[in-house]
Length: 194
Image (tube, rainbow, N blue to C red):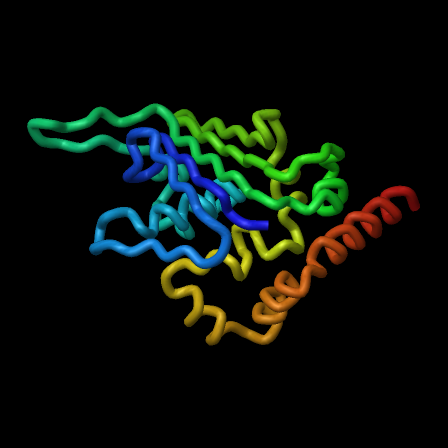
């Protein structure tokens, strides 16, 4: 599985519809300071369910919405932010484990947030919950807390973290987090039944 494309509208510095297409393998995003490189990784983390505005370099979730520019050619703020990512070469077994019982080789995940605080998630243009998105990517190495998306300073944070926190990164890399989550959910249901 690989990140095939990212589309952002009204997200941080991407006021206009911006589409980035990626190929299989390694992709490097380079450019001068302040050109929006970090906003690309923020967009991926955000669409995958990041709930902390601080992790996205903001103070509240509305900070991800384009806030306009000043000057003679100033731009008005947008009323919402939307990011979509398309993941190619999806594993059909992974989709079934996540409750998506359809044969797709590509999955598009979309998240929208509005200035009034409302938020929406979509899988292949069908409304869904944050939990559905998290379940889809659990154990794949892709997710808001995964090892496949490294934000600035995150490598240092992992090196300096406690053993238990480091173990979580290794468990995600090994693909066992989804099984631990399923076990936790099954035990919760058993306790409720008792």
